[in-house]
Length: 147
Image 1: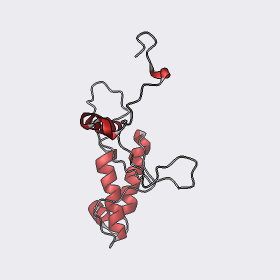
Image 2: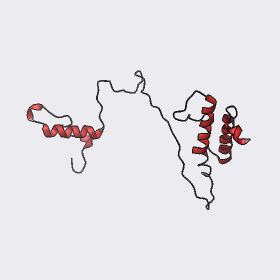
Image 3: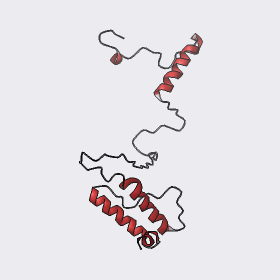
Image 4: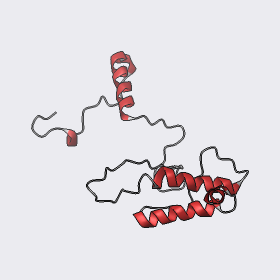
């Protein structure tokens, strides 16, 4: 029976992969070469995990998006979710791009400005000049007002 094929460890991954590929080809949807594994999926039975990944891709992403390219005005379009995973890694130290040294502290602009305001409030004459307290450079002055 169909149910037995869909639940068998041998045939299920191929069946769900074929279902995804067929729906993707028919509806103009992207189907990845390998689906993302289900979160928390055990690797004890690789065949079952692969079948579940293809089944999850079919029902969570492809099936809801099957009418994405339909131009039928009578049909209501449904929104669907796309899951994205991105991994960033630091650049190599030998790159030409300047990388902050480990002892440098880089603050976002809003935190830097707050720090400078707090220093200005607490400043006394014996503390010396504040960072950023010098006159603005001429290229930043307004041509009309001179400020």
